[in-house]
Image (tube, rainbow, N blue to C red; front, side, top):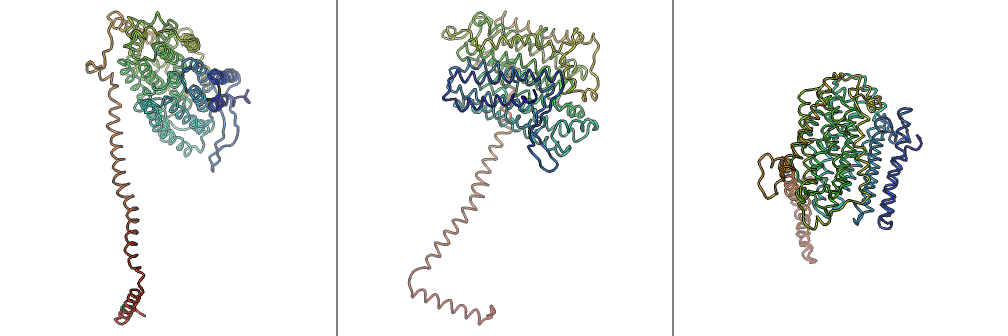
Length: 636
């Protein structure tokens, strides 16, 4: 099987080449079949690799020497261990379902072939990111998914707003990526290598709180902040809704935004020995989770609600990483991939049924019209709200338990955020599926269930959202937490360093009871408000209460960035262009040119062509030389 690992990323790359070159000659059916089949084949190979890792342990395959620069040696090699093997299953499995869904969703789009080519390229780079055995290969995948996100978010680039959203995502990711790159350079300086198998054993021997580790982990975390949309670099992700819905599911659910979580989980021993950085990670994650949840409470665009939900759930994952719950954070990556992909694809099905409408104020009463979409989205909503026995309950509860062991304050804020999650998610469901239809007569006539290519992925993801949590059932509930046992070799060094977060059985029961209770309270309150009382979000032309307006306008973060960053930079660039560039540099260059021209214009007047004038000038010259000599002004 080792000899076939390279095929896992190469097959999607082949799909990109075939569909990219044949986008105008191949039929849509052939393009969809090729793009989906190659990702499915990668998924099958990933399953085989998963079972091999489970039976024999990690696989490290070196293909060729890539970079040899003095003492720095960078092979092109893949590492498939317990962590990356699960990521392979998530990327290729959920990625295949999104490809299948896209066949129906994008069927009428003129850029069908180009879209599938971009999807395949995205999967290739994401696989490269998780397969790399060193930080350099990881960085190639890291940059590659950033490029593909730009191409996919701005896929409908004729709309200036969509093109701007793509540029925003690209630029904000570059800010974070600079931190990541600086972190890699510092790793090379400190350890003389970028290979995980070389670096991590050396790190394990270092003292906790060592300055190099703190600097490296903080710089790497800056990269994670950009890629995984944490405060303050989170505003690109909600705007990424400009892309087609399958893109939202691919970027926001299983792949790109979880890259930061994967990177920190991969570098866990570094972070475990940098407690100050871990505290920063936890605080930033918790603040992001709460802030994004507060914004999601009032949004009226169904995809924007899910976008801010993604930001919030990513915050939960970083909270888990920051308090040492590496398994819990990665468990939430797994369950989030299921229910968030389901919710985004479900939202796409709703938008498809509504003829492109995304405003929930113009929906309502859809549960009897698109029953499969309604049922599957309800399952996803229950899962993300942390209500047992669905998957989100188990992963979120594990993070909250570790947060409680670390800090009561962290736990209280985390539970409050979980309550907000339940409220805004069920608010979305009630506004979309309950009550009377609030759209136009034409929209109501148009409403219909999506084709099988779109509903089958919904059903599969709904099933995974129900049963996905069973791999992490805690012992207090009679389980053995299979995921924790499987991932133990990856986190064994950190387990030896970090303090134990074990809680008594009674405490665990109480914590679970609290989190479920607040979720149910939020669910019931949302039902009373939006179903029984029939409340609706106010129109954009109406006045909102102050706090509601703050939330609806996303606390004016974009406007603040615009005022503090964009406008000063625009002013500086205008100043440098007009004063430094045009008047200074261009003035000097053009002045020299003009001076030369004007001087030559004066000198050319001396060339009259009159022989008598030339003799006269010559005589004057002779007289000048004689006077110069006579009066001793120079030695002859």
